Length: 374
Ligand code: FE2
Image 1 (cartoon, rainbow, N blue to C red):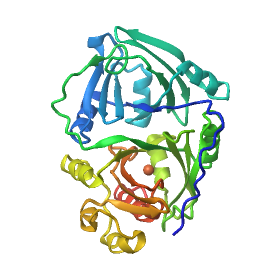
Image 2 (image 1 turned 135 degrees about the vertical axis):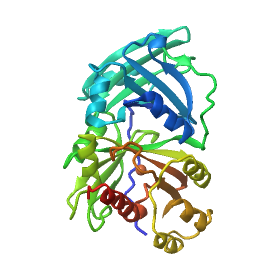
Image 3 (image 1 turned 120 degrees about the horizontal axis):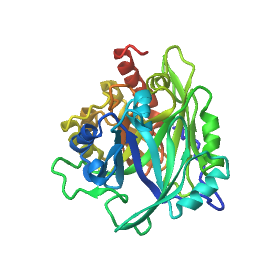
């Protein structure tokens, strides 16, 4: 079977060494209630809070964690705030993809000297638990990258946050870490952003897909996956491609009102168990037709998981030279058809499920049709 073009990251000197994703910050309309959804449905634990009670007058932030996945949900307390404006324009969505570094000031210098636009100069925050330094640069749309240096910080999250000791709501489902985060950008903009990640952040092309790989009867898209030097951070970038009807990427751009994060892929070591729990806790996933599973064994060969189990849950499978991977996609988690999640389990394969694109996009189009957006 065809294997995606894989290009190893070979940066001789990595000018932006990343230790991984520190957290993802969402701007939302009602952080208290959004936090409840991620705790009850995704099983994340509330570990820290900042708001008026902690001296933060204009916003409230809830920090949620499961494994190494850390989300911050932030809402505005006043109308005249950049958070309120972000929510007004985009609905609930990702504002900051925060990357963990040893030296935030250096990360900011290296990226801004290569053409990155500064959003926040290096700033130090401290409390009794130590110091955290952050700095931010602009990415696609209103999305930013924040560099977080927290080397000796021993508090729950950031200075100014109050630790939450025990979460009685959280029902963990085995989520381990972020596998990749996908950005949707506008028509013919993919290469501009691929160039941004290469030039400003020192990333390399990891895999790419064209509209022959990713098209159905109706709609198409193009995608390139950029990865940092050690491969811990992977950002696929999608742009819409011409099809007979509206691409899922166009639908996103219309409702998000511009480029932004499309989906976050969360890794698990047992996708059958994780997805069964999430479904029980009310997370809605895309459904896959029976025919996909009758052809599955023929397409990918033997897999450890019983095919009946995979079909019952709607889990997709793809194989390459190195092994196989299992994946499933939620429906959008807001009323606007924008951000959704992927749950992924890798068993050797480093692919992004190219063999599933057709089945997956047909499932997405069935949902687009129901929304009247196809
Ligand atoms: Fe993905």
